[in-house]
Image (cartoon, rainbow, N blue to C red; front, top):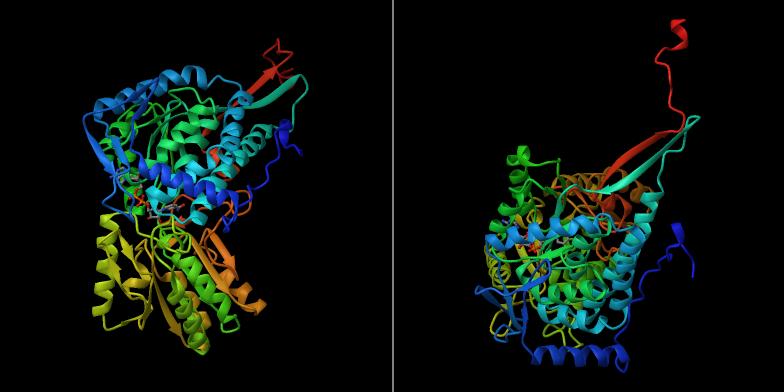
Length: 542
Ligand code: NAD
């Protein structure tokens, strides 16, 4: 096996299994799905040594099968959050001093457990609780999280290896990459089990202790994550999981003097609120906290007249609608030249007519349900409003039905006005709006891409003209943290496309890279002088 720095295993990306008919992984995940569906589980709070059950509980239901109950999760009150912080600070006394090799081994073990005995369970839990197809679960809950665990260990050693190059005679300089002084607050979204796993563990890997608050709609797979962490040997108290009233939990955390950083992924509005709270409390903290947030997007596909219509159509079909468009990277606005519109339309409409939608355990389905009632209400409302907007035409889709689950049909809208509200607002669902531009107006179209919506997460341009591709790449420099040429803007892979955006899309600390781990250390320079001076006078004074 190849090795990285300090002889750590050099990671390779986890191969994505096919789940094709007849494959052993398909049989295994289907059996696991059935088994989990038939049982009820209870998700406790994890506070230090304890699994805590409270008298405040909520049901967990599959979004595609809303009358079925998967079990319940327990909600914390303020005292539980305070207890979790105390437990984390207690655990810190040992964890922050554990040698990095002993820490790293735990996360490498998590990767191997997840690649093997936990794979089917993690995938089935993600299919059931978050309505992902098996392919979407596999690339997220299994492969991406395995990659996060393994690559983060490599990146950690790269950080530790960075040391001062020069030493004056009789001196030795070194940098100690200390964990932050205090605890880290990890707040995770519903849409990626891998993000839920990565945000607390990346900080913990660097020696930090963590209060983790998962999303209420990801609690089912959150329990499998906690089982994985503990089975891999993570000492209790290093990652403490609490859930419940988000605002109360955040307020309690942000008032604590030992709060040392927040690792957030979710919507821009929630992150803005956190930033403000941290600012209001700034004088209370022992140290300036790290604020890391990956937030919303209104991700674009811009097609040059030279581009291939079929390639653009497939990028829309996959990039806008997989996992019901609930990816921060999902394409949700497109710019198509008039000369190519009829072709692109024909291919996308054909694709969309062939999409099968339903439960993820029926492996023919390409899309499933959106996450919860509030997403369903918002997205069906967008479709209703779009129907009444004279500037908009619904090209395909436009149906919704919540009789069995929260099903929103993938919907393609054409806007006459490039600044229409549907071109600017993040809906976080299977709704894409496109604008057809005059072929002569490529430059003006790039300016529209740049100035429409406050976000800058992902974006793609399609062009076979190299001059146009280069021009767009320069011109759109600040429009996306992840910029794609002739490819859909989703599907970033750890170690290949470090992920994150700027403007309203976040602090761009690039999950799955060394840059992110850097935020969870506070370097201390240690200079040692082997021959201390014995006379205060300098030669010039003689
Ligand atoms: P969300 O903002 O609703 O929730 C994210 C987390 O914040 C959850 O744990 C939630 O409980 C918590 N939260 C909600 N209100 C809070 C409050 N007042 N105080 C403290 N915490 C609060 O987001 P979501 O619906 O789970 O995820 C979708 C959003 O996340 C989209 O905007 C999407 O673009 C974004 N996202 C971004 C990335 C990225 O890498 N940039 C990745 C995934 C998702």
